[in-house]
Length: 145
Image (cartoon, rainbow, N blue to C red; front, side, top):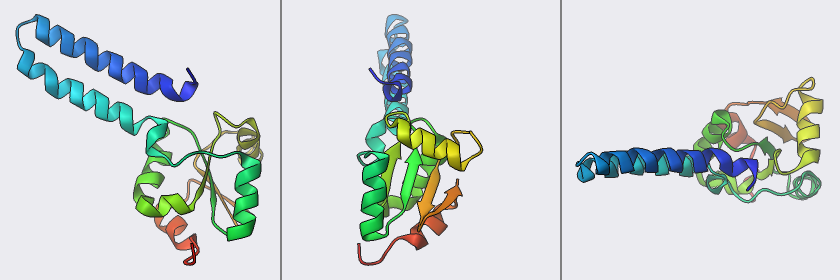
């Protein structure tokens, strides 16, 4: 199990324990709501909400070809989730690099942020932007893609 799945699995486990406690106390109908909430939180905090991550090398190559931004992110980051959700369907045009799965991506983020792994870090046309406004990122997307 990778680090990316620890938080979602803990959320599902907590929801299951809470639901089991409610069932054991004689209120099985009340157990469904908290379990559903915890499962939804696990889904939002899982890598499933993001498009498939690629390596830093591949992302930079693709960005050089199509001019689309490269976003360095990590699971569980609320700012990364905000960016992903606010981009909507446009998020598929962006090249996503999970810094927990790609050591080169983590190194690139540290180099751009004075040694800190601050995400989301977005590279557009060779310029690095840390935690940019999602509306600004959407404007940077090439209309041809």
